[in-house]
Each structure stands twice: as structure tokens, then as C-alpha cells.
Amino acid sequence: EADIYQTPRYLVIGTGKKITLECSQTMGHDKMYWYQQDPGMELHLIHYSYGVNSTEKGDLSSESTVSRIRTEHFPLTLESARPSHTSQYLCASSELGDHLEKLFFGSGTQLSVL
Amino acid sequence: KQEVTQIPAALSVPEGENLVLNCSFTDSAIYNLQWFRQDPGKGLTSLLLIQSSQREQTSGRLNASLDKSSGRSTLYIAASQPGDSATYLCAVSYRVNYGGSQGNLIFGKGTKLSVKP
Image 1 (tube, rainbow over the protein chains, first blue to last red):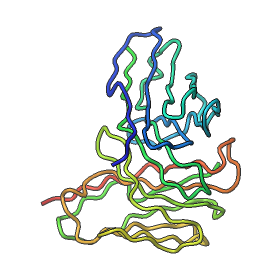
Image 2 (cartoon, rainbow over the protein chains, first blue to last red):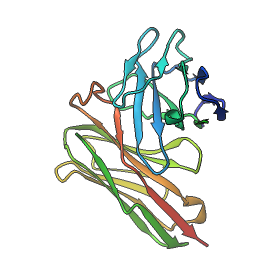
Image 3 (cartoon, rainbow over the protein chains, first blue to last red):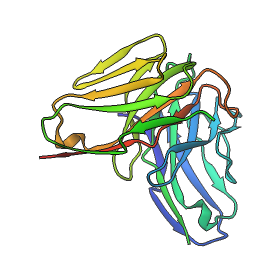
Image 4 (cartoon, helix red, strand yellow):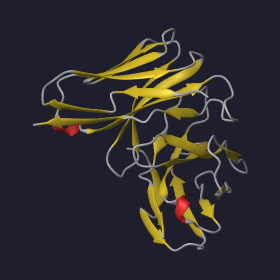
């Protein structure tokens, strides 16, 4: 069982609110990721990190930002939420290796912006 | 743009049947290929990881094969059970740098499997 946790599980908020989606892992993994998934569609990578103080943008452009101050914590922030941000957000982690590593996913946050 | 395609998009079978899910990718220069399972409204669980130098991996009733030259992978599920009902995702990690995310995974849309008792 993977030890990676996301909160909240569901979030319904109004337009213009600032939100932070939390992601924590207790496996000591260096690499962490945020994916966005719309119903019936592929997962798209929006952010990733190789370790503390490392953040990179993924394949899909996103208005969100991330930070990596501690190894175990990789929060995602939206400064001003809009209905177009409605989606499922999935956090994942892996050991930083020779691309042989498995990804471990959290249960996701389903975000709805009204 | 590199793509991962999965067919069929949905599959419904009676319990006990053996079945095959297909995945194709457009570039053979891969690091590895992974199969995941996703239950409704939940995250993904890694099922099998095949390194580029391997041809197949097995775990219990699951067997995944990889043919880099043809850009294809299959996931074989033996003696399917209702508990196997889920969406199965294929993802490929590429060697070249696509959009600044070398080595990161590109996912297919998945095959939604329903196993009926």
C-alpha cells in the first residue's frame, strides 16, 4: 500500500478563491508530480519536482503553482480559481532513479469551481 | 506530439473470460512502459512496469508484453473476476525530451473494463 496522501478529497468553491491542494508522502521519495485529469481523458502532467527547492512545469500549461520546501510535501496552489480549473488533480511520487521506478499515486482531489 | 493509444475504449465480458487490452505508442525510444488500474473517483495503482530491455512482466493473473519495434504493449488478464472491473491505463516514459519532461510518463485514455458475474 502506497503512503501518499492528498487532501481535501473533494472541494467545491466559488470563483476567485485562493486554494491549496495538499500532497504528502512518507516513502522518502525524491521525485513528485501533479497530474490533471478530466473525465474520460488522459492524465496530463502539470508540475513535477526532483527534490527540495526543485519545481518544473509539465506538458500541460497550468495557472497553478507548486512548492517543494520539504521532501515529503508538494502542495499545489491556485491564486484565483475559475470554473475552467474544475478537474481531478492527482499527486504522485517515485524514487529518483534510472527511469525504472514505479509511480505511486494519491487518491486525488476532485475540484469543482462554481 | 507523442501519443499513447488504447483500444478498446470500453470492454464488457462475463466472469471467467481471458481478455487482452491493447496499447500502442508512437515512438520506440522508451525508458519503460507501465500499466495502471484506476477505480472510479480514485487514484492509480501501478500493476506492472516493463523496462525497455524486457519483453514481458507477470504478476498473478496479469501478464504484460512489450514490442518496442511495433510500438505495442498488451495486458493479458486471465480468468477475469468482477473485482477486475476498473479502468486500465497504459503509460510510456520516453527517452527524448518532449515538452521539457524527459522521462516523465505520457498516458493513454484507458480501457474501461466491466466484468459481469
